[in-house]
Image (tube, rainbow, N blue to C red; front, side):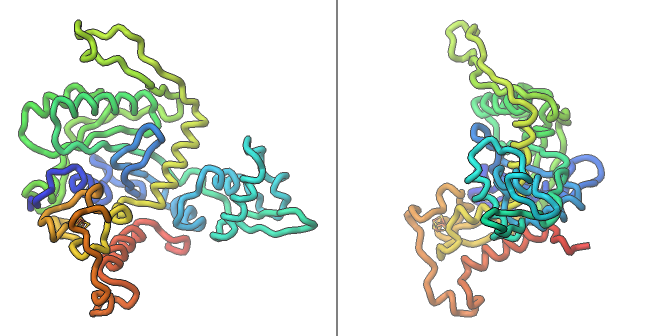
Length: 362
Ligand code: SF4
């Protein structure tokens, strides 16, 4: 099925996420629990699709700390919280920032049931609810989605992937392109770093495929996540020079291993909370024209007013054709606590929950 509007990157990205969730890894048997998220990374680099390969027991233990992400300050507390009651300043290592922020984290964690705290003689004592599973994430894989490549996009993509390879924050970097026979596009792929893998995706949104599938065109190399990385701050561009050769120096800085570990855990925590179906949070499912359209083996957002897949950027209150769903819809056969828009959220939330085992699951 090829839907109108499916040539945009957004529906392709959703189809890729759906396929990754079902089929990852692209070659070999699945031996990890897999969680998928969208649009996550660092301040300077946002990945389209993030794949977490998780230890199932660790993932189950992580669930005890609640469905929301633990911030880096909160992680500092839960990772060092004692098994028995202890004054929080004695129990925790110096955080390197004011203790009042630690107290904030203690209260926030306690409110969500991820830590116990009490007051004794005016002092705050803490006790953990259980050990935080340090190794719940085995590997992090970053995928860049580019359904259609032209020369400019290929150049930008090569720069992004070189940055990913140099920093080695993810264990693997991939690019997902739409499967087609375009020889020129394949030639453009040759300019990408050899460490990056290439997936050709036949998506059920933008091609005639009944079910999204993918083929590996190039296998990636595992990146050195346990070594210091290099942040490329500026890369000379030959196109900027009349001679076609820019002799100015590249600027870069080192990223130490501790920073990388902390960042990886922070990314994993955010991916755990968000999943990839949270795209609906940035859209307007409460608009009367919003629908979910079945496309092969998945669902994509569909705008009845525009008669096509809408992007998340255009589906907002400022959209010219936005119309709130009529209040009567919320009582006419729909669940009592909401109209169709709430129903869409519930469907997507339920699908996300199925991917995260609860502590009492076997
Ligand atoms: S009319 Fe606008 S806001 Fe409503 S579903 Fe379509 S794109 Fe979204």
